[in-house]
Image (tube, rainbow, N blue to C red; front, side, top):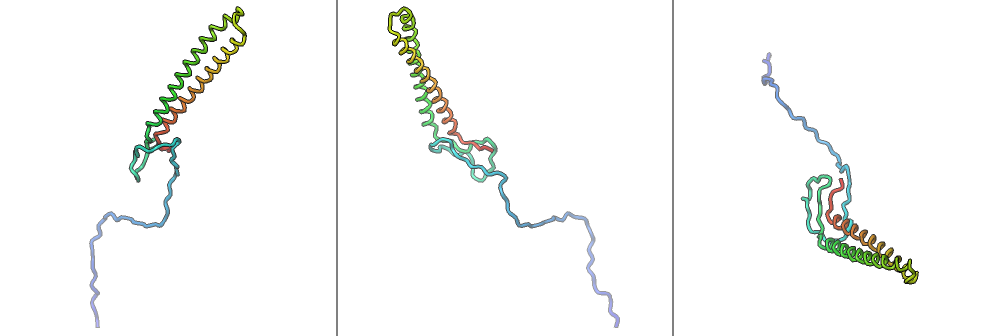
Length: 148
C-alpha cells in the first residue's frame, strides 16, 4: 500500500533581530574601598548625599555643627590679639630701657628683663598664630568630602 507524503508545515523566511541572552554566575566587587572618617570630633549637622547614589570625588558627604569650631576660632583670634598687645607693650618697655641702660641710669638686669619679656611675648604671638591656624583647620575639617 502506497502512502502519500506526510504533511509538512512551511513558513516564509524573513530576516529579523534575535536577542542574544546569556546568563552567568559571578561576584562583583568595588574597584576602590574608601573609609570616611572625620578628623575632628563633633556632631553631624547634615548628610549631603542620598544613600545608594553615586558620588563624585570631592563631593560633600557630611557637614558637622560648625558653631563650636567657630567659637574656638574666635577665642584663638582673641588670644592672638592679646599676645600681640603684650608684645607691643614689651617692645615699648624695651625701647625705654635701652637708652637708659646705655647711660647707666638703670641696672643691666632691667635691660635683660625687658629683652627677655619682649622675646617671651614674641614667642607667645607665634604660638597664638599657630593656634589660630589649627582652629581654622578644625573648622574646615567640619565639612567631610569624598577623597576619591
